[in-house]
Image (cartoon, rainbow, N blue to C red; front, side, top):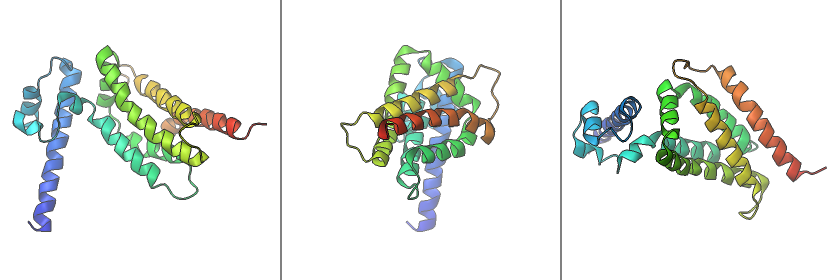
Length: 204
């Protein structure tokens, strides 16, 4: 297979995956997670039910696909941050750059999942992956090992705060935030966590 054919195949696979995610998330919000079947998702995406399993092992993996994607993107952003840029600064840049991709569907889905105790528990476990990625980067900045709890506490505070910001949107009120609005919401949280880390790292 030549490079052109391989590239075309990858683009088609990506398009199919995105179609499945979009169809699944829209149906979950419209009908409910439990009420939506894989067959309905496949039909909405224009593929066979069998095709779904080539991309997602389960319906839950479709539901939380955006969290998995965010976790991967955040990992890359933190690992590839320039020398001299700490984890909190890199996190801020990541949030500002990715905020434009957030949609009303994302917020409505987060609210629907949070309202279901079982799904909310699974969502917290997935978000735990983001927390671990962030904690590792903060630990690297501080030069501390796994026995130091500060990175975990800081990362837990950040993920909890940003979850609340995401959920604080009422139906019918959605509008895409401007960069200034995102910064206004994010900066106080980052400043609070940074102050806490500074206070424990450099006590008076």
